[in-house]
Image 1 (spheres, helix red, strand yellow):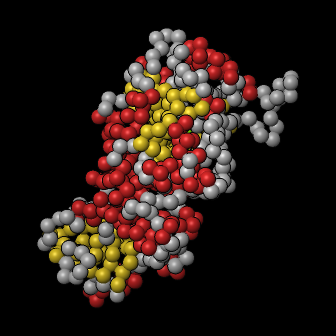
Image 2 (cartoon, helix red, strand yellow):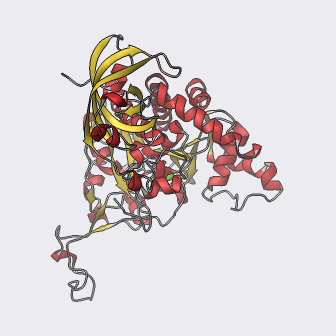
Image 3 (cartoon, rainbow, N blue to C red):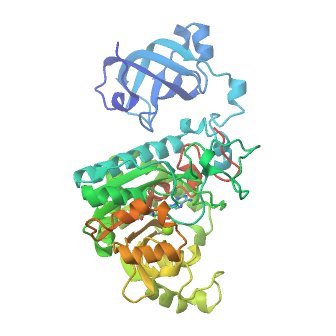
Length: 478
Ligand code: 4AD
Ligand code: MG
């Protein structure tokens, strides 16, 4: 007999024999077993008349155990489910010792998010995390779907790289040199010529520079892969290893880039609304319950699903950095000295400023563009004012910066000058500069922090809870 997934069994016509397999979530009086196989959030109720089964079987139907059940799918008499399975054959696939289960998060009761993180190898089995990771999957799929439908080429850019795209000096070194006995050159510096690649290499912080090479031939490309940043910031929005989505489009300026970011975000969020209903509804209800226990000021203004709809249905606000500074300087928290960080033209906006603009002032996603050139990366296009670059950040409620992008400096001389200003040796980026010599065109792109998107869509408050195995300072378990 062929196994049917619980997701399909719940929709199947009653009065037929089926085979289901899964893990026991819980049971009531040994008779009503809640079985889950990960195909959906809902469990299948399996009725096991224990008088008809060997003690061997009955005693091993415990929380966490894996079982295989053949039985009749029938309309359920009880409340809470439309159908149930009346078991005729039960096979124990994998036992789970109740004493050991009692020490884990598989014990069916409320556990803190911190404890769940410590048992990240088991947390997929919880409702919250199964919902989050099904949604994470759906969002990856939606991203590929959007780009495929819109004629983008998926480009796999290298993970090991010799260049620092963002120039922020937050790279993880990749080396096979013996760390206890590092070879030195005549000047006493590490002799990188003896290293595996014959040069200094690191894990990439962004696939953008390589994506630009692709875009200026293939027209429109995107990358979607892991990126690494050794930022020592243990916040709820930073990971040392995260996934980034980076589209890059030729024959495009900053406005085209902003349009793309908005259309793309609306598309993928709508995809979640259309395709992740059960999981979203569960997270929505969970958040409302948690919110009701919080003081009013800490609650979400809109519940989860309303927030998602709101983003899809409303245009993003677009303002320049200069306008943003102006709004902030005229704001109440600024006048009452409530901001911790300075608000002066030329200074990078802090998270508190971004959140004020998005959550208090505009109450919707905001795109800030034309930033001072001093606080942005070398590759961004100089604006004619001599002070700003054609950069843009997309800010989301509850998240802050979710996307960072720009129009790229396509003029050879200007780019060369910027490399000098940023101390980037020409011989490191000669290949990047070459694209500006052979048929250079205006082009633009952005990077979406995939985990920040998943935080927004699931309402999870900590970025560590939207990636299966988070990598953060002092933490690389599992
Ligand atoms: O703004 P960033 O640094 O932009 C770039 O890397 C560009 N090369 C992108 C491009 O134009 N192709 O990073 C892009 C996004 C941020 O907006 C944020 O959402 C996310 O990546 N991000 C992080 N997410 C999790 N943990 C971190 N440490 C992150 N750093 C950036
Ligand atoms: Mg950024």
